[in-house]
Length: 69
Image 1 (cartoon, helix red, strand yellow):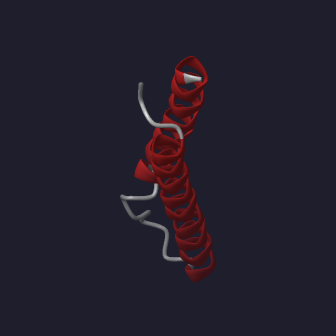
Image 2 (tube, rainbow, N blue to C red):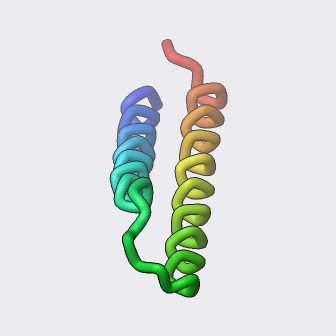
């Protein structure tokens, strides 16, 4: 069971890191003055932050559900 826990947590941590890296692209505002582009970028940044938070919660739950031996 410990092996499965490590594999699942490893996968979730990789996905979290991918989303954090993608979120970094939205940290620097574009020089584009188009409000529609700004709105779309902020919407995507919100979505990515939500994914990161969900993955962190999943990781925490799995760590608590399957105790270390």
